Image (cartoon, rainbow, N blue to C red):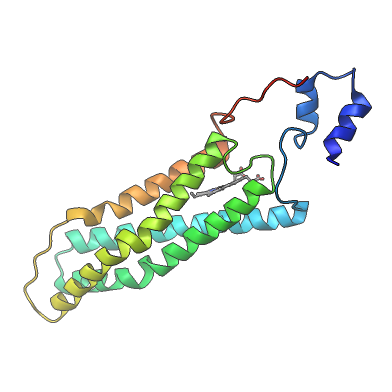
Length: 198
Ligand code: HEM
């Protein structure tokens, strides 16, 4: 039996449902996973660390891409274009997947759920979209850039336009900062209003 029911019996008649809700968040928030306090904190540490690593790789990718675009030294541009594929695909994907997995565990193991609060559901959608774009859109794009880098390093005359390649290092960190702000401020409340308790 849910511990919160016991609480409602114990204090029934003295507390309003609203007050009870704040006393016992579990009452109206069934959890699919039970996490001990230490486990939850451990998962939260991994979650925040993976989000930080993800943002860090995004920033590094932005620096390397913008250097490839604006630098006048051909060797530097060639190096940047080739280096991108090394650190931008698997580290990004791994950090994104760890963030997603730990986020899901935190959601299922807390009153927040996965699609119970707007801020969690929005982060879930952002995380899935950003992580999915890495193998689907970023990886093929970076393979092309890496090939250009090799040609440039070999002394071939290569012209490349900024094109779509400036979007990943702008869109992804911007979306991650939105997710970060949502995580800290937890705005917008519940997705579905609760029916009033009897
Ligand atoms: C998109 C990338 C994400 C970033 C940058 C991010 C960032 C964060 C940060 C910084 C916190 C700590 C907030 C605090 O303790 O005040 C947090 C907590 C949390 N995140 Fe994420 N997160 C992301 C994805 C997700 C996903 C996909 C989910 C679930 C589907 C999720 C669910 C949660 C939950 C439930 C908490 C609260 C944990 C608790 O205090 O019990 N997050 N997130």
